[in-house]
Image (cartoon, rainbow over all chains, first blue to last red; front, side, top):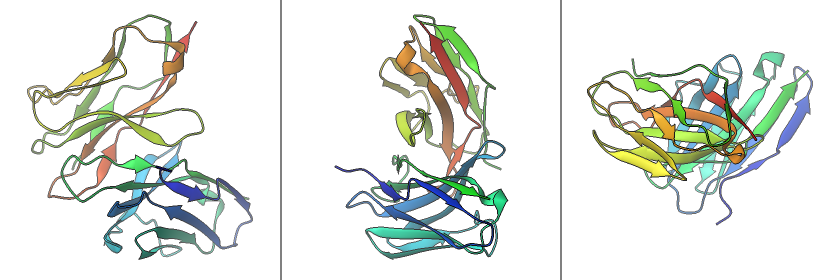
Length: 115
Length: 113
């Protein structure tokens, strides 16, 4: 099993540019989660999907952030326009189903630096 | 609201020392509880979990017991190794059937030879 795949692993961009992060969940997993990790705020859930449908996006910081899951094997997190305060490590995670106690499997993360 | 509090780091130990990292959660129901570990440059990995009161999760020599009386889920290991150096996160599920995980701030552990 390849695990959760994220791309790119590192992204450096300039303020105002559009950034797109990509995630491929583990095959057969029905739930997908996007997290952001910073030193100041720790690990925050941004949004999660179940069966490709957004269930809770209350953690999305503002309208500059958007996420999609067009099919069961692909999701994107887009930031437009990007700002320096968006610099963080963004993790994607998936789990087999929406059930109590089910484990989430994390990808390696995308380290984003906005200059 | 639902929250998790874990001890501040960093923690520095010598090899073969005993490890305890404290974790407490807000007492809204009986949520599933987790410990995740993050090695440098990697994503989080599940270390162990417990889904109901008095359960003990264990893995790789680490243990944690779900204590509803003290709303705690402390992580312990009897003899740490250099390879255990990582950041450890305690987490709980939120209430209401949601699958949202709430994480503690993380505790960085460094084990010296």
